[in-house]
Image (cartoon, rainbow, N blue to C red; front, side, top):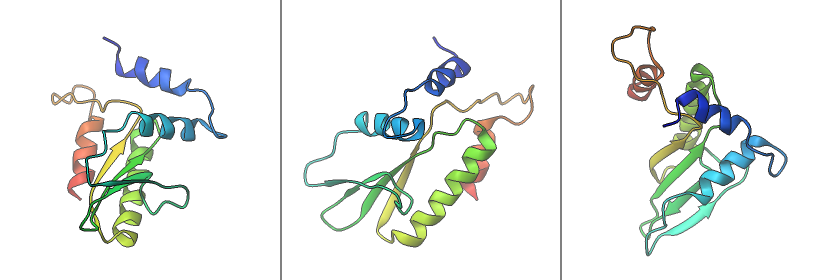
Length: 128
């Protein structure tokens, strides 16, 4: 099974699409998204996106969104996620859920043998 570093390094090699690797990763995530349920409208956005790359709009007007972050340093990732969440909360009053797609798994060693792990920092940020 590939390690986190090997998987992340493969995503670092993603070919440029629409002018950037970021856009290529966004498009890959969009292509691999969950199937859109019946009776739900799929809407793909472009910049500025008010905190989501795409979302489902349900018949009652509520939204379920996805945001993609092509960032490899955990602290930078968490900062960018907070900014997107803040934007989505302020600009998308009908948003009920937001899922982030990132290019690596978060390290999770509860022994803290190597310090605070990415998963722990993510969980703290999510709680805030």
